[in-house]
Length: 186
Image 1 (spheres, rainbow, N blue to C red):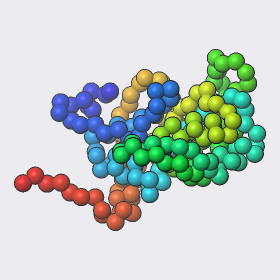
Image 2 (cartoon, helix red, strand yellow):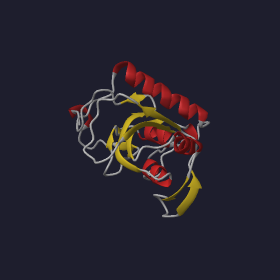
Image 3 (cartoon, rainbow, N blue to C red):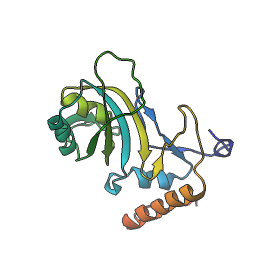
Image 4 (cartoon, rainbow, N blue to C red):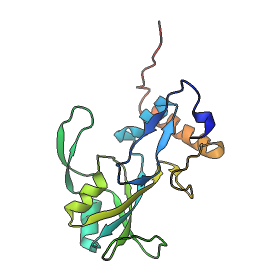
């Protein structure tokens, strides 16, 4: 992490998570309210992924994914099992990318844009329509884009990007109707 984000005693909050087999953008912040605002499902923060699947999906199966499919997930807090249809999302077939995959068989590359983030959601959705995820990379969360940042690297968000992110936080908090509690020490 950049040295300015490792100040002694400073707490970092993750904005979302990735499973062990996935890669890509993970946001960390020292602003707990920003993390809360961006993680609230009612705010519908888009998350974008590049996903390679095998075997390739038909247009009908892609339409099924976009409309939502029933998957089973366990809530992180409380451990309650949930069998519900996923919310509608966007799934596009990507053509002519320069990525290579070291797997047998034909691989199809897709762009998923979701507004929810259930545990292993994309993997379960793809399995539901008869295919398998070969590779999954988060490339965007809200307004923050991975860009050309190499795997394993970290970068501070600053300048115009930081201002846009803080403005997003303010909008999300206004839309929440000021429901954030202030914690004070007595």
